[in-house]
Amino acid sequence: MLGVTDLHGGSPPSWSAEAQQQGTTALPAGEQLDLVAEAAGRRDGVQELASAYEEEVPQVRQQVEVPQGTAVFILSLPNGKPHLVPADAPNAFVVDLGGRSLAELQADPLYAALPSFAAGSVWELPATSYRPDHDGTVGALDALAQLFGA
Image (cartoon, rainbow, N blue to C red; front, side, top):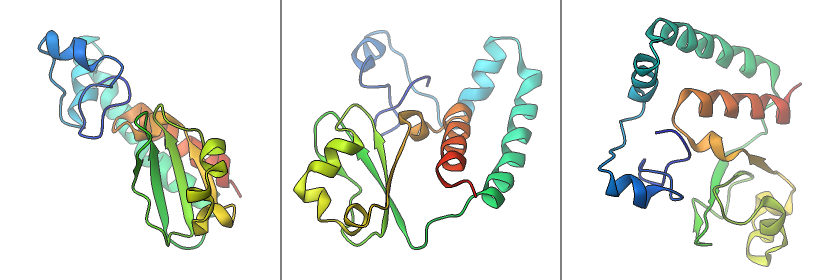
């Protein structure tokens, strides 16, 4: 699935109605790269991409100073309903999927009262970091390296 999927791995909300009308079905995570590579005639590059990712993970892990304590990922959705917000997490990552931005959430007294928001231990990750594909995960790694690079 190219694009940010819905909460169940389906078509992105911005074009899910069209996808359903056309009979499009989402592939399980992990099969997408193979299918796209095959369609583009570039199946030979799949292993190289996977290997590059596997090499990048430990490099990023060594280069960043990870915040202490647990972290929660908050999905900011267009419907305005919070998802994945435990009250006691000392760190939070906001992924804006068409909802309120980090700045807007910080101005909301409900969020401002959470320990992570009160302590200023909240960071925004790009919407693509929610995607369970190669580009999404590499983008998330790059964002984490930029946020917490030592």
